[in-house]
Length: 127
Image (cartoon, rainbow, N blue to C red; front, side, top):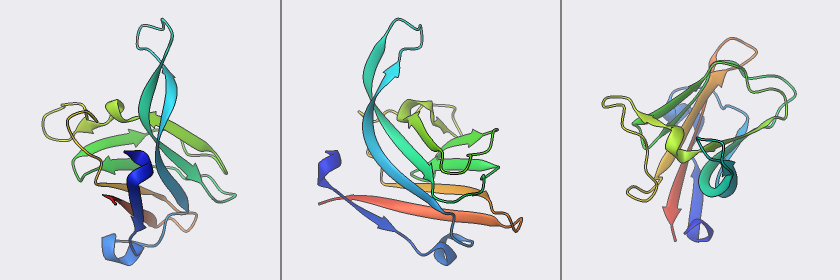
C-alpha cells in the first residue's frame, strides 16, 4: 500500500499560512506495545523538522478530523515517529484505525520563529 502512494504537497497559501519546513511520510515501524510487552510492526507517520530552529505548538491532523497536538517543540532536525492509532477524532474521541480508513491527507501546523503559524498539507493518493 505505502509503495503505491503518490505524495502531493499543497501550496501553503492554499491551506492558510506560510510553509512549515517539515517532511511528512507514512511508513511502518516497530513500536512498543501499550503494556510494554514488546515491539509490534505498526503504521506510522514520520515528521522531520528540516530547519535549524525548533517548532513549538506542533499539531497534526489526518483527513481533516483526527488530531494530535504535541506539547513539546519539534527540535531542530528532529524526526518524530507517531503510530497512526494515537490520533483522535476531534468530535467523537474515536482513534484513527488504518485498517478501516485510508490516510488521504495530513496537515501539519506549528509556530515559525517569526511568530506566525506555518502550515504544510500533504495529500497521499494511491497510484
